[in-house]
Length: 234
Ligand code: CA
Image 1: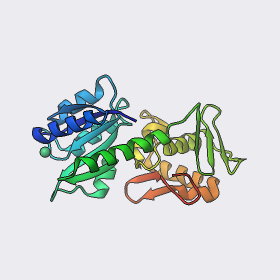
Image 2 (image 1 turned 120 degrees about the horizontal axis):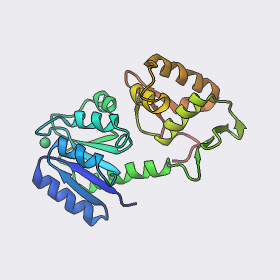
Image 3 (image 1 turned 90 degrees about the horizontal axis):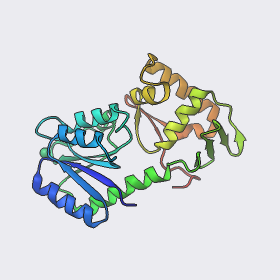
Image 4 (image 1 turned 180 degrees about the vertical axis):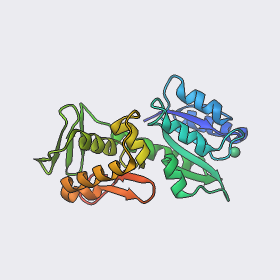
């Protein structure tokens, strides 16, 4: 499952070690010492699968880099694993708000880092539609035909409800803030408010019956489609 990893880290010794270790594992690693440089690399070509993002960078905080990655359609879906030093542990809610996928506290072992990276990449791979179809547990989506089945029965969803469910399922296990959902489901030009997101999620949950609980609320942050549940494949 090798992938392209961008390391944004101002401790050059650590960064060098990580580049070496990741390349040895078959990944292709690139490195920037500043947040701005990291954003430039991420927005350029070719695409990265994951960013290892240090929280304390010389020019801007890692949280701001993450916010900017999430705000740009080119980099919106990149996985972000935040690296923090002991004592500057990032607040879980702040991490979710800016859209980080996971975080690791320094010092960490290279082995642990690689396990985390593989777990994140696997999750994304498992949620990637094949031939326009997305399935998870009792739910099946036909993305081209805009149809949804629950336990084999068609669920009548509106276009927006379908898009919302598809987005959440395709990014299962990853937090989606209301602002991110407005952007990706309604479009960044739309002027709908976050309450509309909540109302749409509520209607979607009702229509999904027992599968409605797969859409979790993260209070004050947004929503997340569960990554694992009883009776569903992990
Ligand atoms: Ca640092």
